[in-house]
Each structure stands twice: as structure tokens, then as C-alpha cells.
Amino acid sequence: MDIRQFSRVNLHKDTPKQSTEPDKTPTTNDTKDYENLINKYKNYDQSSLTSEFLQQADKLKKEGKLNSGYLANLQNTLSPMLSVEQKKMLNDLIEKIK
Image (cartoon, rainbow, N blue to C red):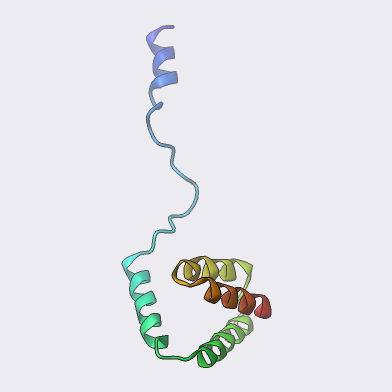
């Protein structure tokens, strides 16, 4: 093997491949948005929170913004912060609005 062949084969061997997936790391703005939402809803009881969730879902449906990708993202974002019981309630709500 000559140097040209070696460099073609090994030049980028240790270079990490770039992902074609968009970066899903929350930005500072995302974190502030989450904090604002948490503060807005932290004093809601379960009934009020469920009612608000369904109203927001209805609004998004009417605007054409509620789709399976949106719901999956919502579920993936919220699930790590929820108890097992809360995750079940979230899953039930998502099934209800689909």
C-alpha cells in the first residue's frame, strides 16, 4: 500500500461521523419555556390540569398543529419528569386526543 492508498483509507478513520439527525439538546430558551410552563401550572389540581391539557389540545387540533410527532415529542419530554402513575395518565390523555 502506498501513501495515497493509506491516506484514503485512514485519513478520516478517527473522525467522528456527523449525524444527519437534528440536535435535540434543549437550548436556554427551551429551558426557560419549560420553567415558565412549570410555574404556570404548578398550582393546578389534577382536574384543572387535565381540563387545560384538553383545551390546549383542542386548540392545536384546530390550528392543524397537533400530530403524532408533536404528541411523541410531548410524551418524550414530559415522561422523565413523571411518576409511573402520572405517565399512565399522560398516556391515557394522549390516546384520548389522538
